[in-house]
Length: 184
Image (cartoon, rainbow, N blue to C red; front, top):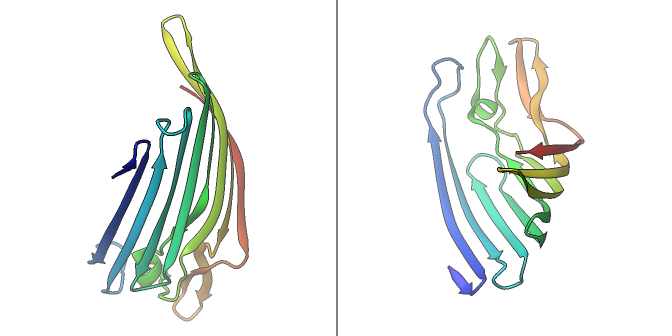
């Protein structure tokens, strides 16, 4: 929905319902329902020349596991038609999968309905652009990123009686740092 020229808004509702069985992995029969409300504001260069901004949120409410709200903000400034800078920052989450929650395979792992969703904070920053050499157009970008993950889901315990690995949330923070260069 256009709020004013150059500023758009979006809102919505998402309903996801899971159920079923797996022919390979033994998963306890169970169902899961997740509801979410989300929204976004987006500003285009029509309002501020050469500037692209957006911000959004999503509130997730599963019936198994913790609820979570995530947000993100993105900005890009076009210095020229062939050079830009962009940043994205926000929070992320990942709900546990059906395997991580409900698996009970005597030859493999066991799920854990007490799992918390993975939560993280991240930032990406980049500079890029485009140029033409003869009849070929090129696009390049240099990207740096950082992410801190809390409650990473992994096999964290072992039951010697059933000989099963048990899913859990790892303690502490997992830090991911890196960079990337692209040429198209």
